[in-house]
Length: 101
Image (cartoon, rainbow, N blue to C red; front, top):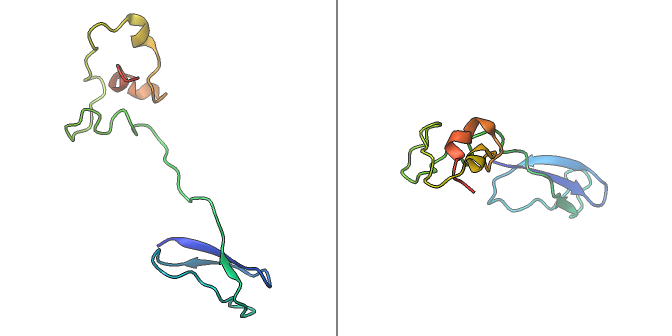
C-alpha cells in the first residue's frame, strides 16, 4: 500500500497516511476538524538502478536472458562500430549490446 502525504489548508497540520490505492482521499483534518485536508503531490520513492535493464533482459525474444559474450558479431559490422560504447552506456554488457542502436 502506498503512503500519501496530506496537509490541512486551515491549520497547516501535515500527516503521512498508509492507504489503499482504491480508498477515498481523506478530507477531514484530525487536528482541527476542518474539511480542508488535502492530498499533497510528492516524488516517487523508488529508482531503477543498475546494469541489465535492456541488454540482458529478454533481448532475443525467446524468454531467456541473453548471455554476455554469446552474441555473435553481425555481418558487415565495422571495427569502429564494434569499439563504440553500448547504447545503455554500461561497459559490462558491451558484448550483449553489440549491434543495438
